[in-house]
Length: 428
Ligand SMILES: Cc1ncc(COP(=O)(O)O)c(C=O)c1O
Image (cartoon, rainbow, N blue to C red; front, side, top):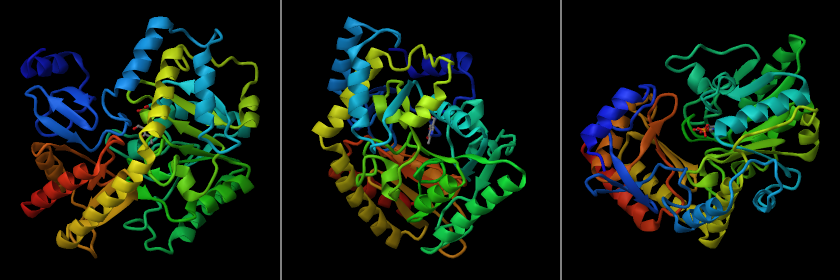
């Protein structure tokens, strides 16, 4: 194993500085197991942030599925192979009835780009409505629909064909409180009207059901129901980006959109789908998929290969066998309760929100002024790291501490995290 100095030098010399490192003093992580990571000195960290290693770091059954399929075969999808069909059948069994046709890809970005292409083809329009603060991926097409990026450092601002609706954030958004839903829906209505006034039609409303990079935002109750109805009345498609929140993370439901009681026209999934292996998918209805099949072949060198499918399949089985959705619900409820107890004694916690094992803690100076505290948030996650707990910050003001651990996170972990957060907050 190389020493930390050498690893840092190699990184500095050969890797683009656009890749960022977490924490003031970067960690050299050498291995992981379950919800724990270990550094080069053998120090153990509770991983409370890695939503990709969904069923736990280095899960033996994922390892076994990978090795046994790699030993047999890995090819593209131009031959008949049993893995892709078996996996697609299992995946579709988790979907609402109409969402029954899969395209396999290699990253969340690739799935979202494909979803856009499918929607543009189906609607013969490119006019896309997105939520302010949203992130949907790193390809050109997705930077263009990600206010998180195009309005962030280095961004070029909003482009044509993209329409930004206010973040439906009832804590600090344009409209606040429990009755704000209709005001946010009216904003979507105004955007659609503007699109029509410029003699265009809407292609798609593209959103997450719980916003991740946007700051762990739970959308107002019925927001998606009302917005989807409006979009469809105007012949647009509704795309749900489930890249961060899918696969039982919310605890109450397998997919995030189910928490809003809607069925999208297209859903995109990735991240946790392969527990770290690059597999993702775009899933839609037969009708929309058939319409896309216009003579231009869809070929993907790696998407849907038998190794990826065997891995994805093993992840779905583990979620069921280990009751991980239920665990997310129970442990998530406990953790949220403990965080809300901290909110009472630490006034800089302005809001605790989220569902299951997808939670956010928003830090503010004052309950009325709500000025964000990004530097305090940064300090907290660095102090928590020293105590052996890994967290990160996000949101448009970088003042939201995010919690989205592997789904094997347990009750003891919840107590450990909140007890240490209490200590750190008391010394800030
Ligand atoms: C909501 C959402 N969509 C899409 C993506 C892009 O996925 P990937 O990094 O796999 O390309 C991300 C990544 O963070 C994401 O959070």
